[in-house]
Every structure is written in C-alpha cells, then in structure tokens.
Length: 220
Image 1 (cartoon, helix red, strand yellow):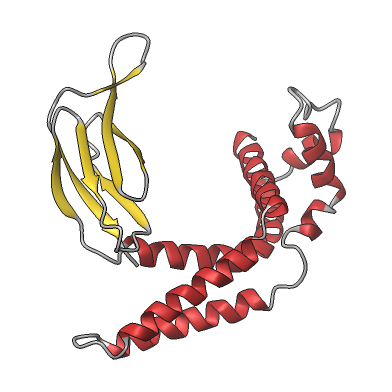
Image 2 (cartoon, rainbow, N blue to C red):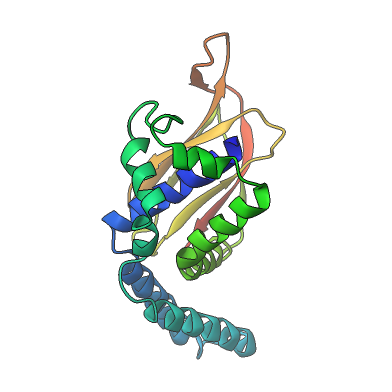
C-alpha cells in the first residue's frame, strides 16, 4: 500500500507543478533553442551530418507532439472526483485517513494490477512532456566529456568563462566514497564542497580529505 500512496503523492506533486507553471511553452522554447544551435553546427567541419539529421528529426517530432497538446496539461485528472478529494486533504496532517477518504482507501485495497493500470492512465497526459524533458536533459548531460579533478580538503572551485553558455554542472563521484556534493555559485564561478556525516547527530560537515571526482561543464 505504501508504494501506491507514494505514486499518488508524486502524481499530485506533478500536477501541482503543471498548475503553477506554463511548462509547455518553456519546453517548446528549449526545443527550439537546441534545434537552432544544432542547425548552426551543420556546416561545421568534422560534424557527423547523418547523426545530426537524426537528432534534428527527433527534436522536430518532439516539438510537433508538444504542440498538439491542447488545454492545460493534467486538467482532466484534477477534475477526477477522487483526485480532487485527495488533493484537498493531502496538505492536512492525517487528512487522508480512511474515515476522511474511504473511497481512497477502497482504491488502495484493490489488486496491484488494477491500481497499476489506473496509474498508467492517469500518467498518460504527461508522457510526451516527460519524453521531451528526458531527451533534452540527456542531450545536455552528454554534450561534453568529463574531466578528472580533485577537491583539496573537500573543496573545489571552478571559474566559468562568461562567454560560454554553460547549461549544467555535473559532478560524478565513486559510489563507494561516503560523501555527497554541495554545489553553489553563479555565472562566473562555482563552489563544490564534499560533505560527510560524522558522529551520532549525523550533521553533515565538509570533509578534510582530498577527494577525486569527475567534473563535467555541459555547454549545449
């Protein structure tokens, strides 16, 4: 039952984000930007034109699918009586208890296959948006190769070239190392601190060790 509750909570979060933001227009702008950059690269020497054409075709297809979406994404779901009642009560501590929302708990008690089918249907309006976002982010993340770096006593700073249109900073750390990265910065520089939890209170502190990692400054 916990997994069904988690799935509903995620779906409600997604619908809340779409309700507050015009993601459709933002995604179309980003798809257009990426297509424009790639078209400028077409005449550059050493570019694999066949591969570039495939990517441009994918961008074109994604753009057409997003443009075909009418109305506010997710409106049909939020109009569902069950979802409306869950959304209204979910912000209240204990608001989704069985005595408040018996219809919700009736659904939670259904066979896993029935709930899975319902979740697939409820998630359909977001499939094209998800596909476009996944494509764009993967393209940005893999636009450049990573560089091996070392954070001296858990700290690393990079100065960013203001003439380069950086889109994303990616930090890759060996999963066997007991640290996590805390990243802050702006247009001109970026600070990376590797944190660890020591002691019974589990309060994160900056490591005092030199930590190897891979840094990728994604430009596309």
